[in-house]
Length: 233
Image (cartoon, rainbow, N blue to C red):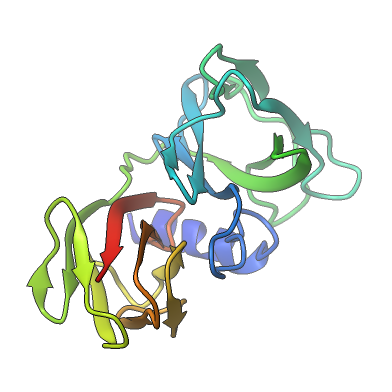
């Protein structure tokens, strides 16, 4: 178990370009903030479902809507090594990654890793993101958001803030996040400081309404997110 967990950790360390966050800035247009693989690691001969997470100023989209153009492709992970899986697009905008029963011969110390590229057209602009898919016989699961708090108070359905008053936002997951976890916060109202950490600080200088998003990666290819309506009075 420790060897395999080390393999997953090494994957994320060796390939920082894969599965990157979109820049956590003020949300003014739709953006792909991540791709969830369910399960995060796929066994030989099995498949995992890949679903894009799309944040918009008007609310979350779990996959491309009918008006959004999306294309899934396999890309080269290692120079000269062809992708070895298969992609099966779905009507809802997600895709299945089918792992081969037998892995090809890889260079010494190379990880059994495929890279999947998602190209999406959002508001007339093309966005491309990469997702790393590890093929290994390892039971894994995506984390879940356990709590989202503002100034220590749990956020239920809607987050309400006062104009000009900073709020400390924090998120926790189950299982609990380790020091390998990464965070990204997005908002269509106000400004977020320390937007790649938990806790972070959100302040809005004028009233308004919109959405707040947080995306968490556990450092072992697991991804989760939460979106809540945000009202500033």
